[in-house]
Image (cartoon, rainbow, N blue to C red):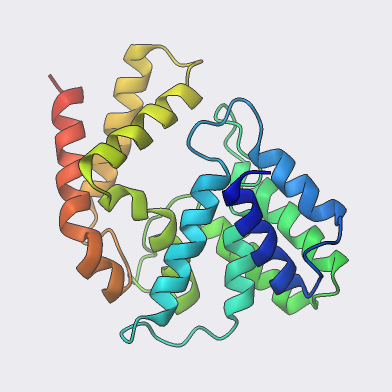
Length: 218
């Protein structure tokens, strides 16, 4: 088991209230999904960093109180459980898996609904019409997009990983699709919803996105 998987196991068991030594089928199934050979970026490493960014943002004094932080952690664990680049329903399927696992450990329906809603929010990463999201959603979306504001070398490695995951798409299709995604991000008034992540990563994220887009448009 890799170090990121050990970290995910520890978080899963703590949130679920299970001993870390227990062989829990739902946990093992999640880790198996994250080991799928077509994944290059959306692996246990990505989920580990999402969880770390969640924790850092929750600790930040500027972050509003999250009512149910463990539901947020559960959503972070499962948000990319299902990842097939050729499909458009990955988030819905990931949410369903997360809800089923939460039911198995006895979580009530309202808590499962929170997890479901949080994971579905990662499908578009766009602000609603009024520009407002609740604190938990803001924290999860920012953590998922933290890589955009990474140092340039780390950002480049992320782009390479995603490109490998989309190996079924030819170069012309990739360039057009990726450029559209980048323009969508750059058109948003802010990339990060929390003050903590805006201060830490907004400027560098916009620089990374603009630099990648400039290359694609050459």
